[in-house]
Amino acid sequence: MKIVVIGATGTIGTAVVGLLGKMHEVVQVSRKGPVRVDLADPASIDALFTTVRDINAVVCCAASVALAPLDSDTDVAAGLQGKLLGQVHLVRQALNHLRDGGSITLTSGVFDRPMRGASFGALTNAGLEAFVRAAAIEMPRGLRVNVVSPGWVAETLDILGRDAADGTPAADVALAYAEAVEGSAQGRTLSPKRT
Ligand SMILES: NC(=O)c1ccc[n+]([C@@H]2O[C@H](COP(=O)([O-])OP(=O)(O)OC[C@H]3O[C@@H](n4cnc5c(N)ncnc54)[C@H](OP(=O)(O)O)[C@@H]3O)[C@@H](O)[C@H]2O)c1
Image 1 (cartoon, rainbow, N blue to C red):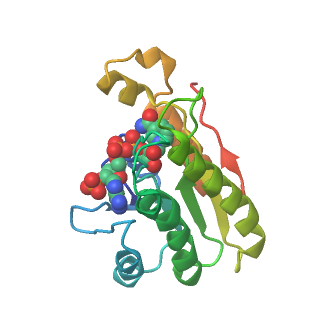
Image 2 (tube, rainbow, N blue to C red; image 1 turned 180 degrees about the horizontal axis):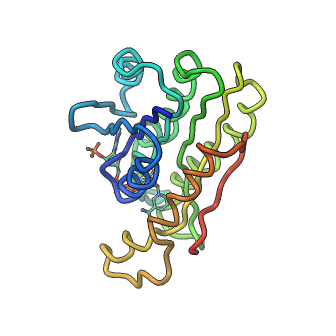
């Protein structure tokens, strides 16, 4: 398969590229590098599909919603632009450009317990999962859409100076993306587990 991975240089994306790259042709995409997209810029998503053609699958593990307390003056709409609305726009563009039977895999996320500042991220993640579940029945040409919902990734906890044992190694998270791309899941939220 020819697979576009957006967020290819990130903690999760690097593991996804490493795994999928063993069996497939992977096009690595982020805001920097030879092939670029900014999820917060819909025009750049449109341009991606004119630059890269004959795609079987798109995997998106990019962009995040910054932690912001509910009573802060954060711009909620701007915060949702990349991860939520960007991934929704990505799906709508991919519908017109993926090869028959292709797939789109998005990324949401889950907080293991309520955390101050996490409400906009929770809104985004729940929105993405509901969107994927509902959008699945409108997929044309045998296309599939799914979302991977990681908890804390071990390598990220390590960077934050926290106990990596509380997280899922990125290599295990990558298995959920491979399942979404190579399997038959449709409209599902996949939850990676430590193997
Ligand atoms: N790591 C965790 O513990 C964890 C847990 C739950 C959910 N998640 C979710 O998983 C996803 C990936 O997380 P991560 O930890 O791998 O992130 P990361 O290490 O910060 O990497 C993010 C990747 O996405 C690219 N990127 C960032 N903003 C972008 C944008 N607006 N448009 C296009 N590319 C963009 C980055 O490259 P450039 O900067 O070059 O664009 C990089 O390749 C995020 O949605 C995150 O919320 C992560």
